[in-house]
Amino acid sequence: MKKWLFLPLAACSMLAHADAALLARPDIQRYIDEQVASGDFTRPDLEALFANVELKPSIITALDRPSTSRPWYQFHSNFLTGKMVDGGVAFWQQHAAVLNKVEARYGVPPEMVVAILGIETRYGSNTGSFRVADALTTIGFDYPRRASYFRGELTEFLKLAKEEGKNPLLLKGSYAGAMGWPQFMPSSYRKWAVDFDGDGTRDIWNNPADVVGSIGNYFKLHGWKKGDDVVIPADVVPGPQIDKLVSDKFNLHYTVGELKKMGVIPRAEVGDNVPAVLFPLEVAPGEVQYWLGLGNFYTITRYNRSTHYAKVAQELAEQVRERFWAQQGAAASRTQP
Image 1 (cartoon, rainbow, N blue to C red):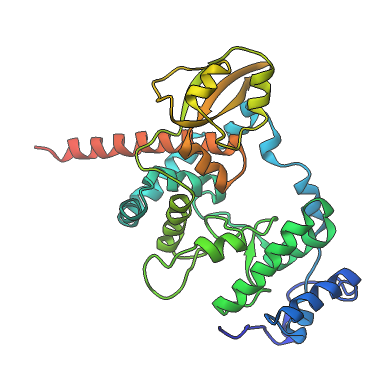
Image 2 (cartoon, rainbow, N blue to C red; image 1 turned 180 degrees about the horizontal axis):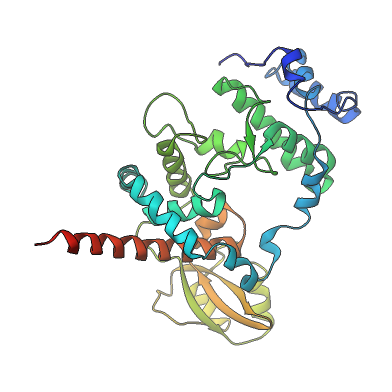
């Protein structure tokens, strides 16, 4: 295991205006005690870290107003734009070789990888400006509703930094501690990030090969099936069974055949034995459309637990694919005699 590469404490202190009282907090001291007892970290390293962490109250405010809580007709317009589609096409054109290799290895098509990168970081152009240590500490110790999860992610992050030989006070990410172009949480990085180009490092901050390879690996290991549909439209017979199904939209508990018996009417051909979830989209105020999310839709919700996210990823991927191949066809026609 690599040595933890802390900067000298004097240099670290210039990186942020740390909360001088943070290190003295009983909950921080208990956390340090637990980690030292685990044998993974030393007390001097952890005290040097927390002496230089800066709590960010603005993060707590942001967590209370997630973008995916907006209705679909407001949410999707931020992502399904001409600029986003053009950016996805440009990314695909620039990285076509590695995207094709990722598809060959993991079965995940280029347009889906590209769509995820577009939604997460505008194709790597906006990966977040918060120090990950600040973000995870803030949520882990000052946001009780999610504290347990984020303290776990803080521990994963510290292990990651130690394993990869990185200074934990220098790594930056989103306000929730998600990192790099694909916005992996630390536990996701440790489990599913890959060194796709074989250069000895798993670099999701700067290396496009590792970025797209890591997304492909994540999707493959969460059940993506090459060539399968993502969603199909549906109608419903209103009733309490439909309400129950919609409230359980993140789990593949039923097959299409079972859903039919509960009042769901698929509007496209799909086998009765195919697992699916029913979810609504409010396409205008008071106007709802229903969809069946299939296995690949479920996989996308493992990346981000939001049906809005999964649906916008599916639509952006389709639009990027259509424009990419339209441009390829146009280019080919221009080169013909």
